[in-house]
Length: 260
Image (cartoon, rainbow, N blue to C red):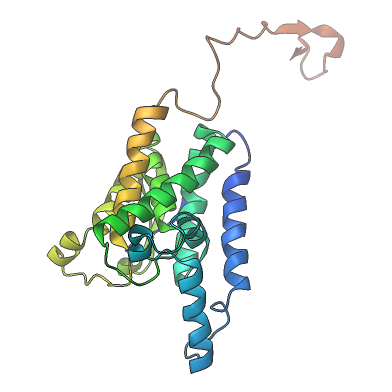
């Protein structure tokens, strides 16, 4: 429904963890059997795709039923995507919103937060769908937690987005409006109210739980604190006053230039 492309919210350092996560997700996708399968794969290729998704995806009934490992699938599933649109949509949101959350959290803290939030949102989906036997894949739960943290930390940041239903008209709106709209669009009940058909292939509960988790974590652990990318203690000393330097006087400026 909305496509964010940029936010006016500078950072104080390069978001190397966010970039690293994007590179890792893209690399895993390109090395898997789905990236170049084409729109109509044959039966053998389809079987390889399904085996790949079931091997690396998180299967709710197995996570809660004690079959197989209950730990590693929730982490491997975060780096597996079911198609190009699935991958690119997730990476776009991570690219736009992840850098500022990383800047506020710190790199190691942000990475741990991302991984644990993704795992917890996967378990939340499994608890809500304990008998589901299909694989849950994608970084959506972890990225939803990043969006929730961003919504709390930077609600007034200006986000430029495109609206497909208005011929991709660019608009700049506050982050709370963009992310709030994204959140309610993850609720199947709201989708039905406005006449948008929800997809049974999308783990909306993982999105909702990840967003709420990220927002609560940012509110309870991080706090908004000072705004802006640079934090200083107290007031900075005033710069020294400017003094005239007549030694560099210019014929057109007989009173000289001001220098420090």
